[in-house]
Amino acid sequence: MTLRMNPRGGDTIHPCQVFDRACYESRLDELTHAIIEQLKWIDIDARVLEDRKAFRTPSVYPLTEDEVYAKFHVEARAEAEKVIEVERKSVVEYQANHMKICLKNAIKTLQFLVYTPRGTKGKVYRERKIVLNPRTHHFEERDVSYFESYPEGEERLLQISNAGLHCDGFDRYVPYMSEELKALWLKFSDLSHLESGVVVKDDKAKSESEETAKTDSSRT
Image (cartoon, rainbow, N blue to C red; front, side, top):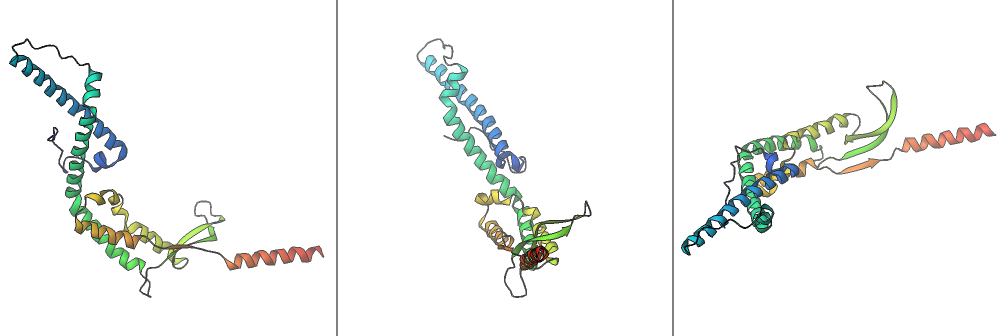
């Protein structure tokens, strides 16, 4: 069966309409009902033609709206899904140049940010620290994440995160990307995913031991 609905071009449809889950379901439902209506009229015309060939007066269409839906829903939904697949490909093709520029820029920035003087990718560490809260101006204990070293690594980690901001959401386009674009995405993805670890502070354990010793000595 050929497409009964003309897919919209990538320049006339917003990516969210066919990639966002809720919008996708809405678009699918809209197309399904439109195709059901077309299939209903095709069925009506076929019945009228059959009556005329038999020299009968065309009869009233016998199916209710619920019966029409039940009869054509599966076929119409399958056609609607095909339409959306074509629209998704069109959206990605239309966005391809923009994505290519974003990915190339992000890759260039990340290559500068994530490699250490050793020539290997650095790591992200998480450590419990006493830090000043800029809102309350009070010191508080919280987990601090940083790239390689503290405190300069906090700013570097922020720069790494910001490098890929313009590439957010590109992962959903991967199945529809060209080989060239997919290769750029894989390179960006590899650079932006860093190994992480947790630092256990030896001085904290030492401090707790010293505090325990002071408490014990005060009791004697």
